[in-house]
Image (tube, one colour):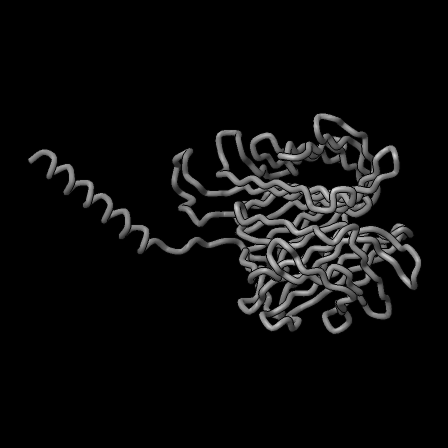
Length: 361
C-alpha cells in the first residue's frame, strides 16, 4: 500500500510539473532598439537579458622561425529559457560554450577543441560589466590596463596569449547596432577591436613556442538574429596593412540567394564608411570540398564594397570546424590573406556557416 501511494504521489508531482511547464509563459528577452545605443566601456561584459552572445578572437601568429599560424578562440553565452525566478543554484539559466582552433599549413588540417557547460559554481561564467568569461580551465578576460588575456588548454595545443589594443573599438553598423535583415528586430549590438597586438606562446607536444602577431576581436549580442529563411552567413574581419579595418558579411537563404549584406570600412584616420546591401558582394573564386562532411565551401573569395574590391586566399583549405558536440554546427573558419590588384593588402579571418546544414542559433 505504501509503495502504491508513493507511486501515485510521484505521478501526481510529475503531472503537475509537466502542466506547469506547458502553461508557463515563454521567456521574454531584451531586443535591440535604437533608443538604447551601444555604450563602451559599459557594454564590455555579458548581457544575460539577451538570448545569444559571443566574444570571438581570431588572428595570425608568427613563430620565431617565421612560420605562420592562424588561431581562433570563441566564447558563447546562451540563455536557456529556464525560469529566471528559479532561486536554485543548480538552475540551468545560462550555457557557456567555447571553441578554439589552430591553423598550421605544416599539419594541413585544423586542430580544434570545444567545451560546453552550465553557468554556475565558478566553473563556467560570463560576467557583466567587463569582459570575463570562463569555462573550466579556458578563460578570456580583459585586464585593468585594457589588454585581453586568453588561455586555452585544448587536446592538441595550449594557447596562452595577450591581446593589446592599438586602436579604438570599431562600432559596427549604426553606432553599434548591426542590422541582419530588413525587419527592425533582426539586429545585434556589435563592436570590434581590430589590429590587436598579440604576444604569448603556443604549446604542442609539451614544447612551448613564443609567438607574436595581430588579432581581431568581435563582441556581439542579440535576441532575434537571423531571418527564418536564413541558412547561414559568410563573414570577414580583416586587419589591412595600411592600418584600416574591414568587416563584411552576407546572409544566405536555402537557395543560396542573399537575404542581407553589409560592410564597414574604417580607415587609418578613424573614418568609417558603411556600405548598404546593394553595394556589397561576395564572389566565389575557388571552392573546396571537405573530405570530412562533403560540404563545399567558397574558401577563395572576392569581396566588393562599393568601388573597392579585395581577394581572399586561405592559409590552408582544410579549416573546417566540427562543433556538433557543443553548438551543433559544422562550419569553415579560417585564416585568409587579403590582396588588392595582385598586391598583399592584409590578413584576416573568413567564417562560412550553413554549408553542411542550415544554421540555428
